Image 1 (spheres, helix red, strand yellow):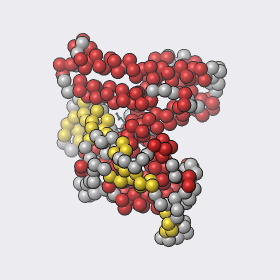
Image 2 (spheres, protein in one colour):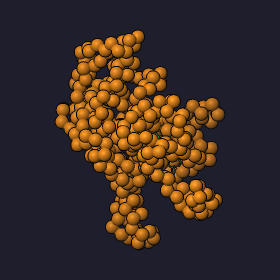
Image 3 (tube, rainbow, N blue to C red):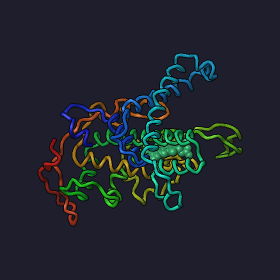
Image 4 (cartoon, rainbow, N blue to C red):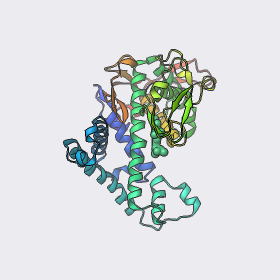
Length: 363
Ligand code: HEM
């Protein structure tokens, strides 16, 4: 947000690259326990990750490129290898920084391990020789992408939707004003838990646009569902995005309605009616962090700015770009309008009083 606040000059802004970079920095700080100021190359890294994924998808659509020998000698294969040369140094940089910071002998007691940020924990396992260097690098790479790219795209979709639904956005801002008033303090965990309406908005937006729109599963025993047989050893696609649009489960599915996620409404649905984080033993382990992070980021943005649409005025106009993950093609282009903050008296949330924007929010 600081970056946006300092640089925004009133014309349409593409928020996607900024949000992704911010997510990578937040990952360095919270998961890797490394100050992001020490890290270089975030921007290049995210661009390479996306191109890497595009190549994976392109290859999957060209069966003649399936054999490694042919792929490695193709133009696409060469680009793929070049990208890998760019991506791994970023991970190695984090590993090197961690080694320097983590020069003390790790305390391997249970309590200490449990309280350790993710990368410190992996280094503990490295010290115990339960993992080797390659395992740790691969885990780190996997977690950075799984944790930052998904949340970035989910945030971008939510921002685009809020821009086209001013009433919903106003309700979110009312909720935020009732929690923060005139203060520009950081949110606490209690604040985040109290952002109930915002959470419903996030969930409804993930219903329309789960950044991972489908997952695949290999069937290890024959299954029969509604007289449809899925034979053993077959691959099936579970199309979450399509399930989220089933009119028998989601009445009037194309209507954006956060109140579908009121507790009494959720209770009425099957637990697999909604699966932006997949379901079962390989579901997303980071779902709670994902939703919490989205609430924190959206609240920071919407406490200061009102977002306005640029290219899309309705949900169905949003162009989608797909490369393993789904993102909005316009890279989340919006206009930002500095807010006149609304202060809601919590004892009477109908009495809304306009106050001047705080000095702190002015560039
Ligand atoms: C809105 C944000 C997020 C969404 C929509 C999302 C969605 C998903 C989905 C659908 C899967 C399952 C893939 C499958 O079943 O094959 C998955 C897996 C995974 N997610 Fe997330 N995720 C999000 C945020 C995060 C965060 C913040 C982290 C880490 C901090 C994370 C870490 C992972 C990991 C490590 C896996 C792989 C799990 C495995 O293979 O067993 N995700 N995510």
